[in-house]
Length: 301
Ligand SMILES: Nc1nc2c(c(=O)[nH]1)N[C@H]1C(S)=C(S)[C@@H](COP(=O)(O)O)O[C@H]1N2
Ligand SMILES: [Mo]
Picture 1 (cartoon, helix red, strand yellow):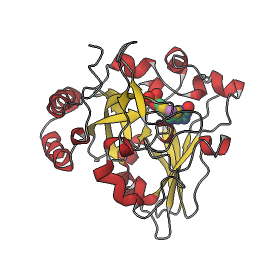
Picture 2 (spheres, rainbow, N blue to C red):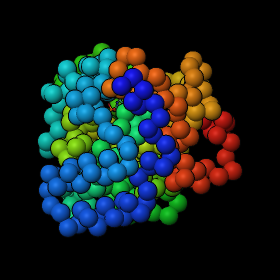
Picture 3 (cartoon, rainbow, N blue to C red):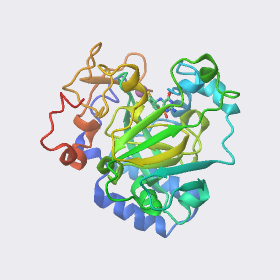
């Protein structure tokens, strides 16, 4: 039991591209969340990537708007108002405006993607997300030539967010990606977990998921998406640029100034479980390494 999580994740466990394509075709012939999560469950077993339970995924969170403790989001996020929801799309796009979730997502295929999730604090989970490729949403709004980055902003709802009222860090929480990272097929706008709408502690109703980067890049409860030609400010980089870079790709060879990134603690592994080795780009090296060809990953942390 204690060693259960140690060696079960290898680079071969990454959802292979052929499998997403098959999955897309499979999903096209199925309807509804139940079919979705059943298919996801089978695929997870086939890959050897065993997802964490919904209970684990929704009760151990970072969502500082609701407090800095891991159980604060579960305790406090229930009051967040997530319906109706609209997202402001602006900057270098052909069709800027305020989009309802339906307008932004209608007709796009919601896929299930079982991804490793690695926090910069050196804990990890495996999460069966439901979502759309961010690239498809960007195509919908029309990215103008010259745009090089995508910036994201989280909602600020002081009346429901005790962490915002206390000002535990500056809000709104902001994040950003290079446009090629944003357009990568692994990058999701996630709308659910286990076939259910996105739980509030995880960033309802829609959040980013960038599985090869440390978790803080995966910004929650998004209300604004901006296309720009300059690298946007990001919350943790602004708070401490030496400790949290813009790129923040998972890299076992580049330690955080205050701790090693070579290994991680798998949530749900039990108190006495061994740590598992952290994988380059969180196990997605084959898919994403080419994005950083020629870059010094130590310099561009
Ligand atoms: N708006 C917002 N997004 C956020 C955070 C946050 O505090 N606020 N925390 C980040 C961090 S540090 C991590 S590890 C992940 C956690 O996602 P999870 O709670 O779904 O596991 O969310 C990221 N997105
Ligand atoms: Mo994190």
